[in-house]
Amino acid sequence: MGSASGRLVVVSGGGGKLGRAVVAELVEHGWDVVVFDRRAPERSDVTFLPVDLTDYAAVLDAMLGVEERYDAVDAVVHLAAVPAPGLLGDHATFANNMNATYHVFTAARRARVTNIVWASSETVLGLPFDTPPPYVPVDEEYAPRPESTYSLVKTLEEAMAAQLCRWDPRLKMYGLRFSNVMEPHDYASFASFDADARLRKWNLWGYIDARDGAQAVRRALDHPGTGMELFVIANADTVMSRPNSELLAEVFPGVEVRGDVGEHDTLLSIDKARRVLGYEPQHSWRDA
Figure 1 (cartoon, rainbow, N blue to C red):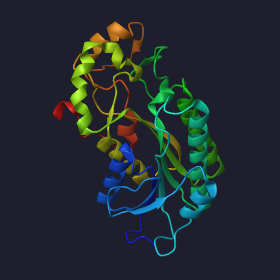
Figure 2 (figure 1 turned 180 degrees about the vertical axis):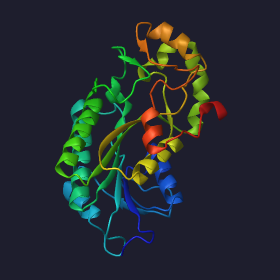
Figure 3 (figure 1 turned 90 degrees about the vertical axis):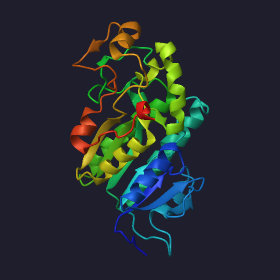
């Protein structure tokens, strides 16, 4: 049984904060969605499989199809992970996230899937910026600077994807370096950030609305390229009411400012995502 739309995508972690928005976005744009997760999504218009991503046999079996449900996967979106540093012990974070990603990538290749989008992270840019960034806005042009086990795994995932694409020139693997994911109900807390610029300096006062993160995933899936590419994915503005000039002078006075950063423009550069993917954030906490 194939996909009615001819576009069937596996979304790992489809029940998570970003995953829920991604599933909704893809369904709305004509994808048939299969969710691999440990908990079922709260919707009836997708196929759900309870898959432990640390069990390679289970991942491969599910990727190759499930009788009477689906038999051919066209694309994979890998979001599932321990979602941040410090939630588990370092070894547990590494073992879970590294193995899960290797299993998903390898199973997708065995199933002849060549369109893979996965969640990398803003943390590879050097968060929490206890060592200041080399310049702002930060972008994809400098080498990763992981400062945690979580971020180290994300860095290794990017390196692995580059090698897999070298092995197979037909493969497309786009890593999206998502900023801190927010939903509209989170915006009520943003007013409190202004009192202390250092509260959110750890990611240059950035964020990503889950709905805009989902837009970026959809655009990455639809993009016709091949090879491994990395994109910073953030919203177009910061979480602060205070202007960038004031924030940078107070917290990062010695950091080079490249170009016009505007009053509230993101300091996590989304120029590449705009240029290559056509990504353009549609939501802001200022409108909520």
